Picture (cartoon, rainbow, N blue to C red):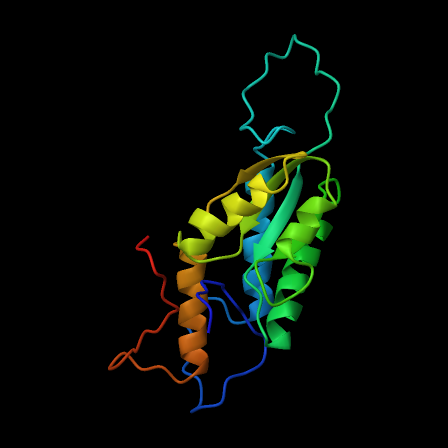
Length: 198
């Protein structure tokens, strides 16, 4: 299996013993998690200027310059042979589009699913910001994404930080553990590895 760090959240229930009640304020569904992730993403995007830079306070006496076309947000997923992974990523991208209808949003996969990142970038013009739907700064962040950007010289491309670590991911993990009948006595951990630390 290829190196991967993709976050795949599925809405289907996990088999196992009856779920323990989750503490108040925890996420009890994938829909809630996606709503909070996209709301935070939308909030962060609201602090960006059209060129992708953080907005600076503008004196009220100055007139606002003509609006520039915002950069295209490219959600970069790893790709998976599991059809549920593609459905989840597509739903997340659709949710971002609904929250920010003024923002061009596209999807690209590192491998295994279409559209591939290279094809997505080839069809764009102007500026693009790659938002990796990955957990850490492994091989894909350090090598594959910069290589894809370099292979699209017609674009001005920036790469954002990956998803993790983020408190929402810890909440999602807790919700999944509760679904599986978690008890505090024993909590195994597993994750996809990477050839390089980070």
